Amino acid sequence: MELANQGEAAKQPVDVIKDPYVLEFLDLPESPRLVESELESALISRLQDFLLELGSGFAFIGSWNR
Image (cartoon, rainbow, N blue to C red):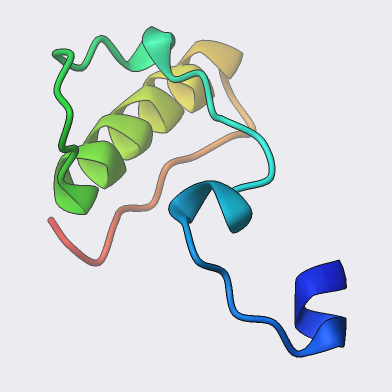
């Protein structure tokens, strides 16, 4: 935010990313390049599983990309 307020452009990706995300629970293969659609599919799958485990009163209606 400080860079934006000063009018400076981010020169490296590390200047933009605040905190790394640990997504080991998604069981995605390690890769230097992660496709957004693969990440989205893995997250939706885990979310669906989690909601189903909660039992009655919770529902996973669906996803627009499936």
